[in-house]
Each structure stands twice: as structure tokens, then as C-alpha cells.
Length: 248
Image (cartoon, rainbow, N blue to C red; front, top):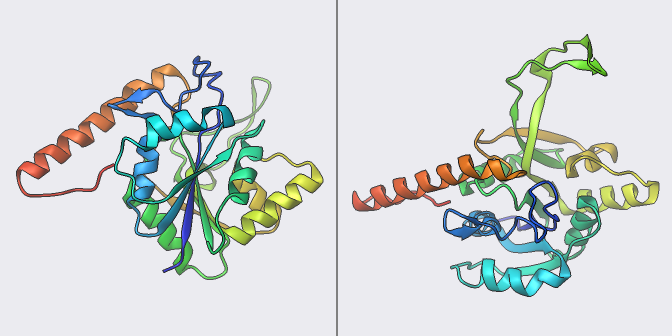
């Protein structure tokens, strides 16, 4: 089986969230936020290693609070975050151990990702020839407007648009080449896929659950917590009846 290394990007400063220490270790449904993502990748049959990206000064705290207390069986190592998300991702890709063919990059602030969604996206990449990566996301459901200031210039067909999420999964070679080119040319992308696309790579969109929400501001915690608590309740009920669904 092709070996996949997961990268959990948890180097944000929490400026929009309003927490000077960042949001990665904020308690969500009884666990640090980042732990939910780590556990989802830990349970994937494809993932053999996990790299957590965080500020160097918080590495020990991250390990002590978010990793060690939980039953994480996949080896976990750390990479130091940089000034930008792109810097952090580049450092993480450089920290992937030798021998891995693919890297799955995920926002630590998306704690609702499921192992099923991870496995589905990885299988699409592995089973499709001539593809350098896949991006989890959802087809746009809102009508989109192209505006100049506040004036509407165009209403493009919504069928052309997807809302990109994470994980975004690539061959490790395609990701490294994309970062080298972006660094050499001073390009800063809006996500990891944009680097690979710009370097001539072929990337597919893969539909993932719509509830794969990102926690950006404090009010995002309410729906995310409710969903996680609901999943935990469903799991407990299933155990009582002899069924054992995946968690997270």
C-alpha cells in the first residue's frame, strides 16, 4: 500500500479567533481541537506517519496536551511553523520522513474531518492515473457574484465553483517541486493546491462532507462542538446495541 504522511497545520496565531495563544489547544467537546484531526488521520489505513506543525516554543506543550494523553498509534513528529501558512507547509513537507510517496495536508482548525472522508480522498488519488493531487471540498451552493467594489459585474454559473477544504493530498514530489518554484519566484498561494496548479500539476476536487467546518472565530465553536457531541452520543448508542462506528 502506498505510504501517506499526514501534515496537521497548527501554527496559526489565533488573531481572528481572539486567543493570543492560538486556538489549536482550545477544548472542543472534551479534547484539544487539534487532537480530533490527529485522531482521524491516526485511524486511516493509508497513513503511516503524522507531522504536526506548530510554533517551536509550543512543541512540548502540544505533545503533552494534545498527543500523549490519547491513544495515538501512528508515529507523530513535529515541524516548526513559519511566518505564513505557506512557510509552515514547506517546513512540514521538508520534515516528512524518507520513503513516503504522498502527503495529506490538513488544517488543525478543521476538527470535524472523518477517517472515512480521508480514506475516500486518498483512494481517488491512488486510483486515478495522471493526477498529482486531490482537494477535498464541496460544489458551491450559493449564487456567486463578481463585483467591482459593491457593484455587480457578472454572475458566473455556480456549477464552475467549488469551496475548497482540507485535507489536500499530493504526491510528495509534486508538492516539493511546487514549493521550490513558489519560493524561487516569490509566489504566495491561497492554499497548497494553488502552488501545485501553478507548477503545472493536475489536481482534482473530491467531494467531502459539508460539515467539515473550519474554526476561525469563537462563534464557530458552537456548531462544531454540537456536531462532535452528537457523534459521540451516536457512538455510545451504537456500542450499546453492538455496533461500532468510526470516531471521529
